Image 1: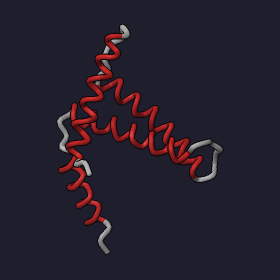
Image 2: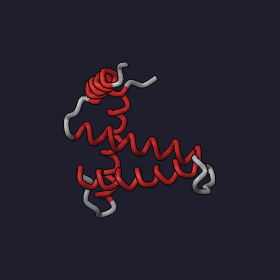
Image 3: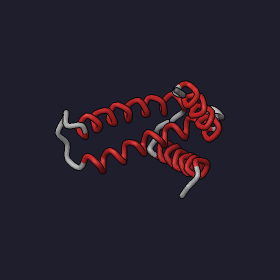
Image 4: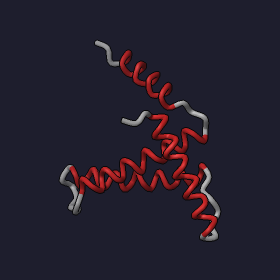
Length: 105
């Protein structure tokens, strides 16, 4: 199983490849602003898939599309975290500890 750091490294490598592809096709490479806009689009698509999964919409191949869209969203989060220097492993652990404290009964 891959660690979060391994996943982030792979996400960075794919982001570099997309930047190179954009330049090859005569477009500017995406920065954090464009990546965030793409992420918001992916979240909207994820919303539609969750609605379909919950029976509120009809869609073919929901499970395959849902897995893909969740992965797309994770990729954006990993690349944005890297860009802004966020240690996601530490931040996630800290956030979960905080939520655990809040929900202690």
